[in-house]
Image (cartoon, rainbow, N blue to C red; front, side):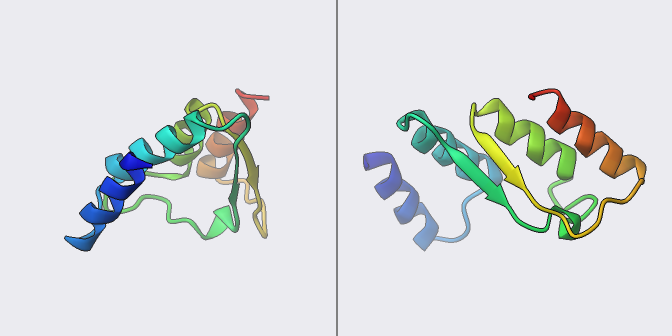
Length: 93
């Protein structure tokens, strides 16, 4: 709980960094027997964001935290980006 309180205090001073969010998520999921994260509308996620992160990076990073993912998408496009995301998910099946 102390880590969550620190995170809340940091947030009052502005937005936490991506690393800080991941650190908190890692801490919280590490205290649970089982963790499931739902990502709705993955197809709405930008190909690349301002932090130079993409869908594949998001999926692979979350799966490295030893959590289960439930991912939805309206459409499955045959773009190389979608193919790489699918491959990233397939590594952990």
